[in-house]
Length: 209
Image (cartoon, rainbow, N blue to C red; front, side):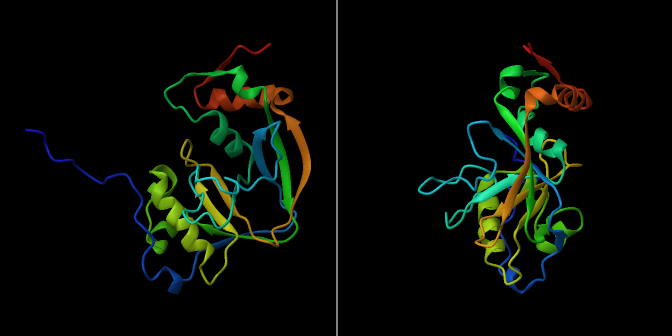
């Protein structure tokens, strides 16, 4: 006889019915504060996915498809972690995963107001840490619900699944969200920094020239 499953399912709960009546925990990032994004060299740094006519792909892509989402981070380490450390079972990272990517620094032309879905704010929102770690389905519902909230946040600040000490950003595609590229560096030119990050996470790089 198969024992009954124990513990939670791992999926985040759906947005509570009274979410619109709750005051959101907002963290404000001032205009001009750097934010970081890792992307392929063939893709522009400012990209709100998944793109017109495409189904949701990543964690906070909205279920409705009404707007795009740009994934970034307030620090370069989180941007790298979310890109090159997505397979925790592997102890080595192939150079070919590093070589075609850039690290870009962006700034916003106005303050960014993000829902801080971290720490005690999770309970305040009616959510759990599964928002950052669980299946994507409920996260897509949260994206729509927060986009429509009367507080009109610009996105979500959430914990990296691969290192919860590092916060990440999911920025909503709003008409007045003015993002400017400050500088772009190919990851191969940052090999020392990438190597130190991998070392801190118990990984190593192979195949580098």
